[in-house]
Length: 570
Image (cartoon, rainbow, N blue to C red; front, side):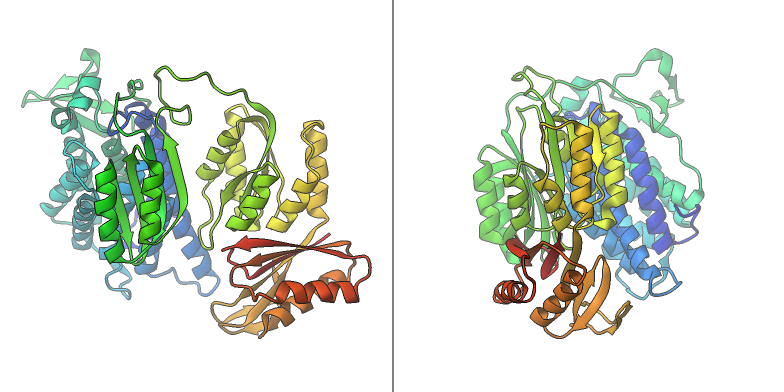
């Protein structure tokens, strides 16, 4: 992680802040989950905030990684800020995560307003915090005081009344947020009854504490001035104005979980939506009539939609009418997949073994699913975070899990997810598959009845014996192992390196196949993306049949998978 403190709000400060905020939310996650009572006591606000921030931080890291291959200079502030906002948007989880995504988007709109500016100062930070609070409040259909919205507004108000550098402004915003957080029980009856502060607001305080640390190098001690919440006598002292104060470690566990709220809609529905502004305006009205806790964030054609409803199908259908919904997640508040504590049906018995796989398109998700795997969809430019992989491992509900990342870039993410799952008592084996075609080969030899170690060895051997390639279109001019490519050129990548540069998809794919089969092979696997020419599979099948004896070909439809074509040779 970059060193702190940062003097100005530049790209490096964005990166530092995201990393520190992720660490702070990780420490406070269980505490925040435990005090989550509004709008639904499902005990996952801390987890959702963490996963949202993890996606934002990963997007910023990707900008720095990509920029580093081209120049030694750090990326512009605008690029880092936009990446932070986009990462949070596509990774937003739950009501709290969706609002956090809009807070970061509001800040990014100010920070990226002048794409050429290298950094901003305290004045720019004040404006960014104001825009964040206002845009988050606008995104919520029916704003409620005593929530994270109140905390965000108080932070922006405190910052607006402060002159100075970024560190001074950030500290003022943090202190204003702490005071507003302490006041939330007096604004929302459900919090006062439970004797807790708002969970989403508590998460925002952790994020703002990270902002202070970014510019000062010191993490502030978390102080909540409590005028309404219950305070243990041995934890408090009385200030001159008669209010109570409690000093806590930001990472310390908090109150015990509250009992879930009775009544209310049965389902939480979340999805990403590709749609224009006018369609989203109509969608808001439709969803507002269907349920509550409606939050719609985003813009520029991409939105994150969150709502609580009784009719989940109608909420999804409304999205279909507005545009193209995807990454649809539906959670039943009464089932065990949320952390409720009321009387529930007995937990389902764990399976002995399961396979969890990351797949690049809907078509392969169906193929893997038919083979019994639990899948995590990775759309182009939207790699899953470790939290999503951990959630999939939990969803598989097995004592033993084989994890297939199917992407070389996901090896560290998958390793972190495997480590977390092991800490929860699940036996996890990570097979370092670098392509979905290697995952197909591994899944083909999977036998749950075998001893776990034997099954993992067999699957690893099958994946390792499968060479992989892909055919894609170059997005920009760049240097490659095969020479200089121009934007629009067709690239054939073998084992991750560009081996062929061409102008025609079919001809390039045929050249790639010839290179791979020159070393031998018995089976060719072709996975076609939606953008691939309709005839390419037939042409390649004929080419293999006529040029290579005793080599079989199998074809799958991958859907929107990024690459035009994936190729595997076993």
